[in-house]
Amino acid sequence: QVQLVESGGGLVQAGGSLRLSCAASGSIDSINAMGWYRQVPGKQRELVAQITSGGNLNYADSVKGRFTISRDGAKDTVYLQMNSLKPEDTAVYYCNAKIVLFGTAYWGQGTQVTVSS
Image (cartoon, rainbow, N blue to C red; front, side, top):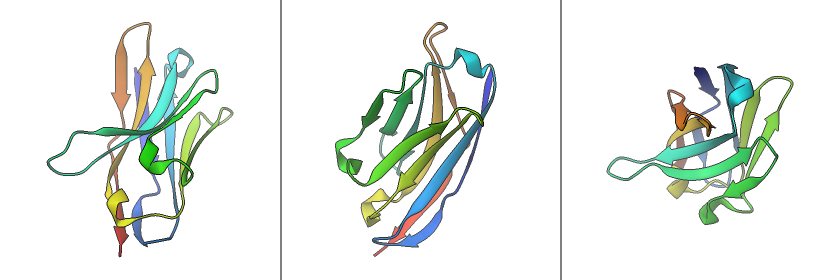
């Protein structure tokens, strides 16, 4: 089992920045990848950024050059630095952890990010 606790969402004006944090606990040694997804009402949850245990990074095209995912191994925490935010970035952001061996995925509770124009 893996538990994920997110923080850092909020309201920001377009062009501003926010940093999301996701603290993992439990069977963290089994995690192969952690990432951030986002979802708006009526749409599917979409991948925003992902970092693997080997350090490989993957970003959605819509956030490349603006968002940065990073990991603090000592604290078992993953961050999403979001710069140059746009109104279309408004969504609930969810932290995700994948364990390939068991084919399982864990989710945080979600944090709201609202970007005003």
